[in-house]
Image (cartoon, rainbow, N blue to C red):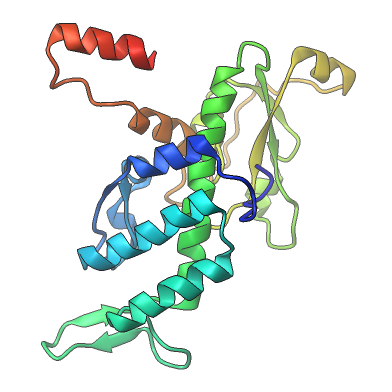
Length: 246
């Protein structure tokens, strides 16, 4: 996915993945729910009211299903958050002290932008990863692609155009998104395309690391989280379920 296109038709794999996520609170910062834990739970840093977290999740899921724009997402959700005291009007500080003495960090337009973009990019990443696994026998080569924008991080741009096998350990830590608002993506290639384009496989790894908190494979983590936890089933039921989900 070169970029999140909010006007696209619904991406069923991404929708199905996002729909099965649970909830998790991250009261102190985004680091409270770390890396792979995001694959199983929806969270918004420092949002500690379940009804507000549910409102945000519902809006993100609607955006994923309906392909609404970022502007539409923010307009609809902002009214709900303002009514519940969780949005900072323009010109006001995000931090506010409540009557009981607790301090609340309210959301801002910038935070809503980040929440929507990052959740859609990650859900699309899981869907793409699933598709790429399905065709890996025919298209076993993966090419890292960066948008090469002025805002692109040097560490991300350094891998642009590099091809590695789908099973290379590189993808365990460098499968996009590799940071907040990262726009990198992965293309799949057949052996015939590799030859026709004069591309060569890179077998070496790299000492470079993605952004803090993104040093894992969101696509793989999401695909694993997508599968049911079968430990609570009796052996016969577990066998049938395993056959069903492959």
